[in-house]
Length: 400
Ligand SMILES: *[C@@H]1O[C@H](CO)[C@@H](O)[C@H](O)[C@H]1NC(C)=O
Ligand SMILES: *[C@@H]1O[C@H](CO)[C@@H](O)[C@H](O)[C@H]1NC(C)=O
Ligand SMILES: *[C@@H]1O[C@H](CO)[C@@H](O)[C@H](O)[C@H]1NC(C)=O
Ligand SMILES: *[C@@H]1O[C@H](CO)[C@@H](O)[C@H](O)[C@H]1NC(C)=O
Image (cartoon, rainbow, N blue to C red):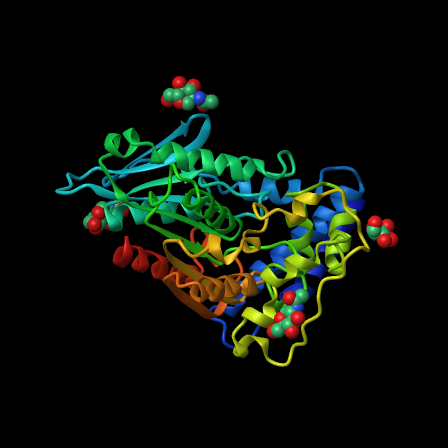
C-alpha cells in the first residue's frame, strides 16, 4: 500500500513538472495542449515502468487507454450507422437517411494511431465521419485494419487495400447509391500514410486506375528513412508526440526488436547499400526555404545497423520512395500539415514532389497546429482539432 502511495505521489510530482513545460506563444488553448502533453508523457513513463516490472508492454498501456474512448454504432435522426465488414475487414458504415436527388459521393477514412493504436470507432473519428456523411450527404466508411505489434507490416496496408477494393467493386456503389466517379480516400497520420499507399497502388493497378477521384491526407507520415529532418532538430522538445515516443511506437510496425528504435533514434538504422534511396526523402531538395532555414543536410548513416528488416527499403512501407513516374498520374490531392508535428516535413516533401510532377495539390499548413489534433475533438474538444476538421470538410465539399 505504502509503495503504491509513493508511486502515485511520484507520478503527481512528475505530472506537475510536465504541465509546467512552456508552450509556444501562438497556441490556442495552450493550457489544454499542456495538459494533453503531460498526459502523453505520463503515459509513456508509466508504460516504461509497467514494461520493466513485467506488468504489460509499453504500447499496451497506450492501447488500453485509447480503447476507453471507443463508441458503439449509434444511428441518429440523419445517419444510419452500422458496424459490418467488407470481406472480413471490420468497417463502420455511415449512410444518410434522407432521400437524395442524385447519387452520393463517398469517403473511405483510414484512422491514425502509429499503426499500433486507434480505431474508426474512437469518439473523435466517429464524430468526424458522421459529420462528413451529414454535411456532404455522403456515404462514409471507417475501416479498421489490423494493428501492430500483433500484425506487422504489411498487414495494415493489405487490410486497407482489401477494404477499399471491396468498396470499389461495381456492385457496391450501386448498392449504396454512390456515384462511382466521386469517391475519396482520406486518412490522418499513419492512416494518411495508408491512404497515400492505397491511392498510389490502385492508381498504378490497371483494374482500379481512375476509380478514386481524390485523396485527402491529414498530417500523413510518409517515410521511415530519415528521422532527423529540420523539424526534429528545431522542435526537439515540442509537445504531444516527442521523437522518442514516435520512434518507439512507429518501429513496432516493422518489428518488436528494440535494436531498431535505438538505431532509428540515432538515424543510423539504414542498411548498407540503401544510400540510393535518400534522394526520395532528401529534405534539402524538397522543403521550401522557409522550413530549411539554416539546417544542414546530413544523410542517415548506413551500415551501422545491418537490420534483417529489409521492409525498410520497401516503397509500400515508405510511400515517398516511389519514382516520379508513379506519382504523375495521381488524382487531386489535399494535404494538411501542422507546424508542430513530427510528421511536418514528410507532408511538406510530398507537396513538393507531387507539384513537381504536375499533380494538383491543395495544401493547408496550420502554423499553430500540433500533432494529432483531429483526434482531440470529442471528448477533449480542442478548438484546433475543430479547425482542422472544418478545413478538411470544406475541401471535400468543394472538391468531391
Ligand atoms: C441532422 O441534420 C440537420 C440538418 O442538417 C441538423 O440541423 C441536425 O443537427 C442534424 N442532427 C444530428 C444529430 O446531427
Ligand atoms: C461479415 O459480414 C457478413 C454479413 O454481414 C457475416 O455473415 C460474416 O459473419 C461477417 N464476417 C466476419 C468475419 O465478421
Ligand atoms: C540532397 O540534396 C542536396 C541539394 O539540395 C544535394 O546537394 C545532395 O547531394 C542530396 N543528397 C542526397 C543523398 O540525395
Ligand atoms: C554491415 O554490413 C557491411 C557490408 O556487409 C559491413 O561492411 C559492415 O561492417 C556491417 N556493419 C555492422 C555493424 O555489422
